[in-house]
Amino acid sequence: MILLNFSIYDFSDFINSIDTWLVETFSPTIGHLIGLVLVGTCFLLFTALLGLSLVYIERKVCAFFQQRLGPMRVGPFGTAQTIADIIKLIFKESLITKQSDKFLFNLAAFVIMMAPFIVLSAIPFAKGLQALDMDIGLFFIISVSSIGVTGILLAGWSSNNKYSLIGAMRSGAQIVSYELSVAISLMTIVILTGSLQLSEIIASQSNGWWIFKGNIPAIIAFVIYIIASTAETNRGPFDMAEAESEITAGFHTEYSGIKFAYFFLAEYVNFFIISAVGATVFFGGWMPLHIGDATFFNNAMDFIPPIIWFFGKVAVIMYFLMWFKWTFPRLRIDQLLTLEWKYLLPISIVNLLLMSIVALKGWHW
Amino acid sequence: MRIIKNIGQYFGEIFHAIKSLLTGMKITGYYFFHPKEIVTQQYPENRDTLKMFDRFRGEVVLIHDSNNEHRCTGCSACELACPNGTIEIINKKEIDPETGKSTKAIDQFVYHLSMCTFCNLCIIACPTDAIKMAQTFEHSVFDRSKLTKVLNNPGSKLMPGIRE
Image (tube, rainbow over all chains, first blue to last red; front, side, top):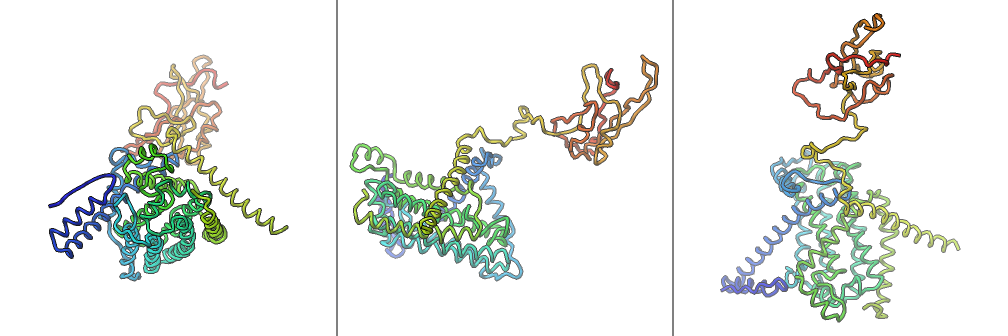
């Protein structure tokens, strides 16, 4: 008999009851396998919905930044525009160029989708709503999210097209460089939490988020994280890998139809992931806004479900990233690497040192 | 000393960069929260209220007043000024009723809209300000010959006192 203790505030009982029911109904092995399939399906549905809605939101937001209206024709306020786009992409011919490495060409589209899917498993969406709570969660996210660059390099190489190759190489250089700053800025907060486990990082923010508690180094780390992670996902103003004006569309020049949609979807899922990680580490993930021991205020904030807190924070960070993308002009490739190696990396290393001093002296709250 | 200067320059650059980036973000942020700034026109829906700008060049029109009189003397300055041969002035001889002299007057002011590039040179060339650019823009037709227009109204004549 399935016992559903569904609560919007804590999902762990709900998830556990489903798990117990599956194990009791089927054998433990089959029950766990069904559970895995269920989780995978949930992530598939989630990414599909995320891609659909994010493309629409991004087009709308960028239009408003540029004094335009954005999609307005398909459906009320253009809401069905992305659905129409997806239908178009599905029915388009999937072209493969004659001289391309066909196996790698097809594989690249899946490799590029794999990395964000694996990372999603470690993201805590709400209390108890996390597929994998590893003790090295943050390390796992940092390391797995860079698998995506393999997909980009494969796509660029197998297309047998000079623009694709230049785009892929640029992307490789960019991701390898900016990965350092992302990791170091996240480590700055790990000094304070003392743990890489995402659930513990969130639990440590139950009396205030690290961006407020962590003094000045936390704010510097957050700014560096935002800049470097934007560059890591190849988003504007760092979209050198697909600079339309110089190298057509970079690594996905030769892709069409549904395989092109994979690249597009991977880009948006990565966009969600960097916002989610930023929200988890700096803004407490699903943890409501708490101020120290102010019980009444904390209880009032607890009334809002954690899942809304999480997606609200992610939405705010996404809004800022879109704001950057649609305001700033694109950097040149040498400027891009100068920014990382001469500015962001030295600053983040000094910031790491500064945070260690702050943590040692106990100057944080 | 040089090192201190260089360090100062390094941080100066960072702060200058942040300041200039924030200036750009302020402008786009203002646009985002002020939907009135949107310039997009939703054309078929707002067809009744849409008003084109004064500077918009839709087509050449010959101005007629309420007495069906225009200011065109038939001098062909616009025809000569037009780079694509869009305008053809066909003149006729007319007997002036007051003086009895034979004078030149326009029979047909032919305007080929299909050839016009809306460069405004004819309007500049006109010595009597007889023609102007109108703001109409819905020019699509099913038959190409409909784009050749005669601009002077039937029975119209020259406004008195223009030729002097």
